[in-house]
Structure formats: C-alpha cells, structure tokens
Amino acid sequence: MSYSPICLDCKYFLRHYTRRENGSFVPTAFGHCYHPRIKLREVEDPACDKFLPRRGRT
Ligand code: SF4
Image 1 (tube, rainbow, N blue to C red):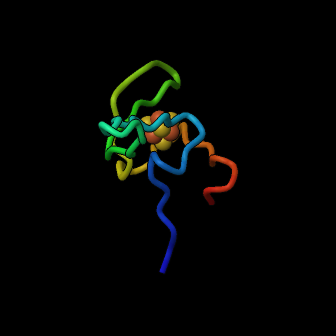
Image 2: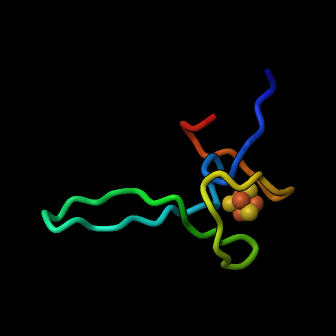
C-alpha cells in the first residue's frame, strides 16, 4: 500500500481547534494553509505540489 500525503502531514498546514466549555481544545477537520498564500483546507485534502513534510508526521 502506498503512502499518499495529505494536508495534515504538511508543514504549511495549521489545524483549527474549537474550545469546549471546560476550556479544553478539540481538533476540527479543518485548518488553513499559509503557503504561498492563506487558504482554507481540510485535514484530509490531498497534498499539492508545494507539500513539505511536517517533522514527526511522516
Ligand atoms: S495545500 Fe499544499 S502547501 Fe498547503 S498545506 Fe496542503 S499540501 Fe501543504
């Protein structure tokens, strides 16, 4: 089985979190990419040609 990188694995992806009433943070399925400009992405979106692996993810 081959590995297909997703935005969650990329160093340019910043995940969005939501805060519970008790103050803890929960990861959402969304985030944004900041390279080469800011845009919304989902964690499982297929990686594009700008992909660079995030340390500790791949
Ligand atoms: S859109 Fe491309 S550069 Fe942006 S987070 Fe996803 S793989 Fe990385």
